[in-house]
Image (cartoon, rainbow, N blue to C red; front, side, top):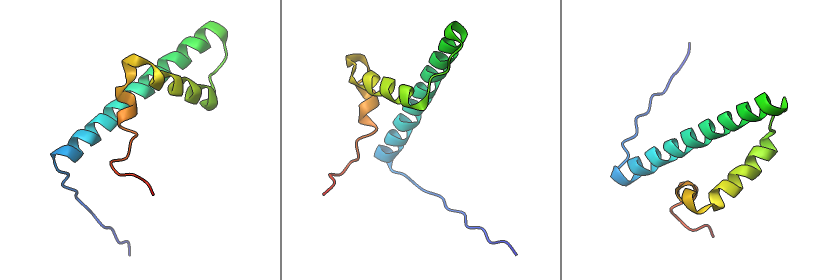
Length: 80
């Protein structure tokens, strides 16, 4: 016999906004690095490692045009 639990969440408007921003940033980062990896492979026949992509993402977050990428990573509370 198998048991299953189904849950439904009802986020408020602020939480919905944060969820949508997070998903949008995830799509942007995935598509950007997929294109970059494809381009590097076609030009150099090499692949970008996770570490290289992680470094590039850190640099991308520091650029002035991509400030919105940093906003979704910040938790709404301060860690103690």
